[in-house]
Amino acid sequence: MEIAPRIHRIEAPLGDRFVCMYLFVGTESALLLDTGLDQMPGQYLVPYMDEIGLKPEKIRYVINSHADFDHTAGNASVRALCRQAVFMCHALDRHMVEDVEAMIKLRYSEYERDHGIGDGDEVKEFIRNSTRHIPIDMALQGGEALHLGGGWHIDVWHTPGHTHGHLTLLDGANDTLIIADAALHNAVPTAHGAPAFPPTYRYVDTYIASIQRLASQGVSTMLTSHYPVYRGAEVAEFLGESRTYVERVDRALMAQLQEHADGHTLRQLCDALGSVLGEWPAESSTYLCFPLTGHLERLVQHGRVEMDRMDGMIVYRWK
Image 1 (spheres, rainbow, N blue to C red):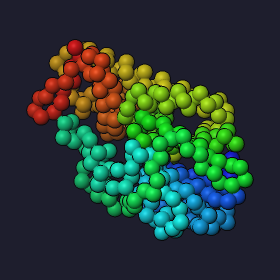
Image 2: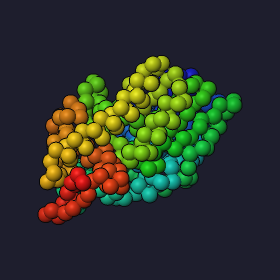
Image 3: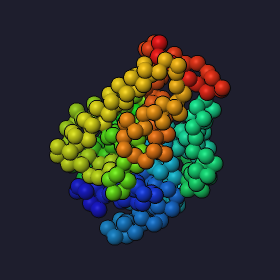
Image 4: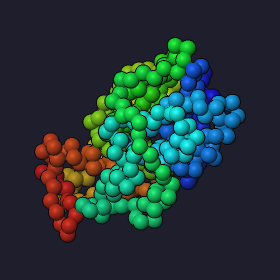
């Protein structure tokens, strides 16, 4: 659907959730943000392009917002459709956007060895079977402007936190931010709005800084990858709750560590705090490993928590 003049949102089902691709259609060229899973461009993008009369050769730019497979796995399918397009992502995420095995190892298997938390072989095989990555043509840093014709341009922002190389797009002409997963409220929802799993930000300080930057822009419309369209006061509410949730996690984590001096593994913290921090299904609490790791790293850095090993697993204790 056309969300704002020349900005089109294509929703594709992703289990009980959805993921969005975005088209920016200028007078001279078009930009595609994110490519979904391998089959999604053929199933959802191409029919939508046919519907609005957009020829594949008009797509000049393809940007991956960040290194998660549901945003990058369709790259090869889009390359086959738009051979002239320049594929781009942030330099800090490039190694994972180009290589699904690197993404599995560094993004989805980070917690296996030291914490005993992982997606399992079945999920990894699903990621491999859903993904066809290709080389990226250009690495971005943030600060670029992509011109689409008629004086219309899209600004590229570096908004890390969910990943090191997360990107946000600003359409100043339409007073619209397209933030992908740069801010994640207090839960990632199902397609019907119920909490599916915790917000999976990873790097706390940069996540907070990115939220503050997004909020300071004061846009009238904000678009995401997995949430509804936000307009007017809804924008500030979403970003405010995203920031408040970080503080909530910090307080809950510190209280849990202080009350149990014998220490916790990361899995134990996920289990203990799952029902405290959200109303998602109990089995989804393991996704707290992403934000909790970021908070724990910060507490260790500030000298408030110490790390030890027990039975091969890292244990965290309040000092």
